[in-house]
Length: 388
Image 1 (spheres, helix red, strand yellow):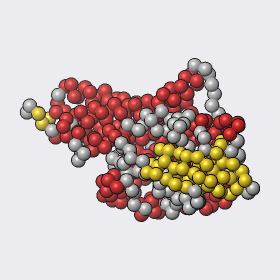
Image 2: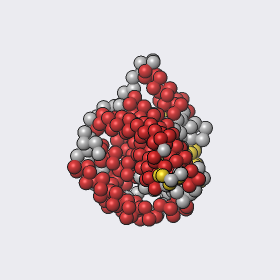
Image 3: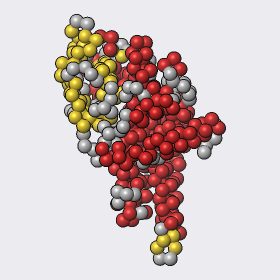
C-alpha cells in the first residue's frame, strides 16, 4: 500500500472495515441485489461503527478524520461487488450529508446531520430532472414563498436513495427569472404531504433504490432553506469537485477488484495443458490494463491529497472522473473476456461488475459534459472558485 498517503492507522482502519463488510454486508448482498431493497439494520450498524461520520465534525458525532479514511471506505465498498450498495452509502454520506454540513443551519445539523451520522436517518440529494439531465441550470422545479413557507412543485429523477430515504435535499428555483442564479437548496422531510416516489428499474446498481420523485404543492418552513436563498447553484458546483473524485476513486477500486479476480481465475483455469496466465497475449493485455489502473489510482490519490489540504481542485477532480470511469469500463470489459463463457454467467462477478461500472461515465455529470468543463478551463482559461 502507498505509504506516501496511508499511515499505519489508515491500514488498521482498512482491516477493520474489511472485516466488518465481510461479516455484516457480504452475506446479504445477493438478496439486496435481487430485491432492490437494502435492509434498514445495516445503516444503523454503519452508524455504530462510525463510518458515516468519518470526515464530519465531532460536535455532531463525527470523527473529523482526514480524507484518506474516506478513500479507504470508498475503495473497500467497491470490492464487495455491489455498485448499488456502495452508491446508496456514499450518496447518503457524501452527497446529502455534505450539503447538510456545509450549508445547513445549526438546528438542521442538530436534527438531521447528527441522525445521519448515527444511521437513524438516510438522506438523498435531488438535483437531476427528467428534462434536464446534466443541465443543472435548466431545472424546472420551483419553490415559491407563501407567508412563512415555501411551496415546492416539480419533479426529479435518477435520485439514489430517492424512495427509501428519510429526508430529501431538493434543488429548486426560488427566483426562476434569474436562471441559474435563482436556485436554492431546501430540506424536505419524507413525511411532508405532496411527495410521491417511483422506483426505477435499472441496468445495474440493482441493490440501490433509484427514484423518480414528484413534488405537488409540498409545503415546508422557510427555515428549511440551506445556506442563502438563490445561492444553490454555486453550492452544487462547489461540491461537484468532491463528487467527481469519489466516482474516480470508485472506478479505480472496482477496476482493481476486477483485475485481482481475473488474475486469480487465470492462474487456475487451464487450456492446452497450461494455465491461461501463461499465454503471452493475455499476459501483455493484463500488463496494459494494470498500468492504466495504477496510473488512475495514483492520480486520484494526488487529487485527494490536494482536497485534503483545502485546495479547490475542480480541474483535477474532473479529470479523475473522466479518465478513471473510462478506464474501469475498459478494464472490466476485458476482464470479462478473460473468463470466456463464465464471464457471461450471473454466478460469476464480472456480469454485475460490467453493468454497475457502466454508470460511471454517466452519473454525476456525463463524460461529454466533463470534457466541455475541462475545455473551458484549459482553452478558455475559465477559473472556477468555491462559493463559500
